[in-house]
Amino acid sequence: MNETVLTVHQTSRPDGFPTAEQFTFVESALPTPAAGSALVENLYWSVDPYHREMMDDVPGGFALHTPLEGRTLGRVIASRTPRLTEGEIVFHRQGWRTHAVVTPEETRRLPHFDGVPLTAYLSVLGGTGLTAYVGLTRVARLQEGDDLFVSAAAGGVGTATGRFARLLGAGRLVGSAGSAAKVDHLVRGVGYDAAFDYHDGPTATLLREAAPDGIDVFVDNVGGEQLAAAMSALREFGRVVRIGTISQYNTPDAPPPRFNYADIVEKSIRMEGFLVSNYRDLQEELYEFAVPHLRSGRLSLDETVVDGFEHIVDAFLGMLRGRNTGKIIVRDHTRTPAALAA
Ligand SMILES: NC(=O)c1ccc[n+]([C@@H]2O[C@H](COP(=O)([O-])OP(=O)(O)OC[C@H]3O[C@@H](n4cnc5c(N)ncnc54)[C@H](OP(=O)(O)O)[C@@H]3O)[C@@H](O)[C@H]2O)c1
Image 1 (tube, rainbow, N blue to C red):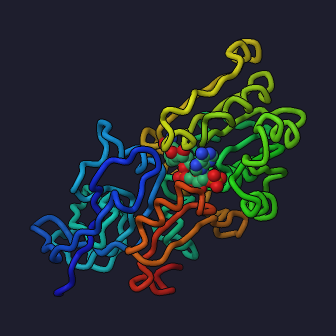
Image 2 (cartoon, protein in one colour; image 1 turned 120 degrees about the horizontal axis):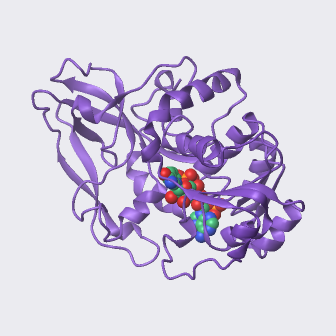
């Protein structure tokens, strides 16, 4: 093996929207795994909004000039541990690089479900799907017939939320997204009853038109104006599931949302945020819920797959600007033949 390894480093901190110049691709020799570890060639990479938060100088953020971390799926190509077999596909967190040396403790074996593509382990069966599942079942404690509003509804978490909510018996589903094409996909593809482009006017007006009778649950990926609008639309005993605040990741000085705090008392509203990392124990439950639906065709994948590791930075920056529909995944198309993908 005389291949080289490519690793993405962050070289400077962004002020507002990050740019490609704040990253660099570093080339090095293919490492040899030490005893107890294995060499993995990465096949699929997840790039995520939380990477934008990690680009800032924050505790636990990315160190400059150091390999970045991210969720990835790779194939073991050389092993010096009986616990990792050459040829097997594993999940691990040393993303943003073509190859990684991993120990068994740093990897998770993927279960094999016939007919389920590998990308699903980074989308509906991965952290993205788990976030949607936890938000609906544990935080919203969704009841049959509940009417929902979901922000960033056409993204990874948003599409999974819509599809899961439908399967769990939700009532009216309303979503917001950033383009007419996404709005169309939400209604025709995902099963939302109504959707709107949040650029088309004040969210409060657009939401009132889409959900004239109000909502029971707001699943919030965005924060800002959409959160304020949803607070007014919520009915008595409404729940706000705070998942993310992507409207502020590149504009930290944006004013916080303004809404009537008295609504929280008078409508007995519960607002709860969570980190999916605190719900890893629900992974098996997610498989039990989602895999039969994937196999029966009642649950489809919403993914934007970008071919070529060399495009990983562009894929990340594009996702922050809304270029993805569903979960954004980068694929090494030279190493993922059709047989592997299914
Ligand atoms: N709590 C947790 O543990 C957890 C776990 C996973 C994700 N999250 C959060 O969940 C949210 C969605 O994550 P994801 O991975 O599914 O990403 P995603 O929704 O697939 O991609 C991000 C989307 O955000 C939208 N967006 C960007 N800037 C925006 C703005 N200013 N206002 C409104 N929308 C904007 C874009 O879509 P449009 O074209 O519609 O603007 C973009 O496609 C993020 O806030 C993320 O941080 C939280």
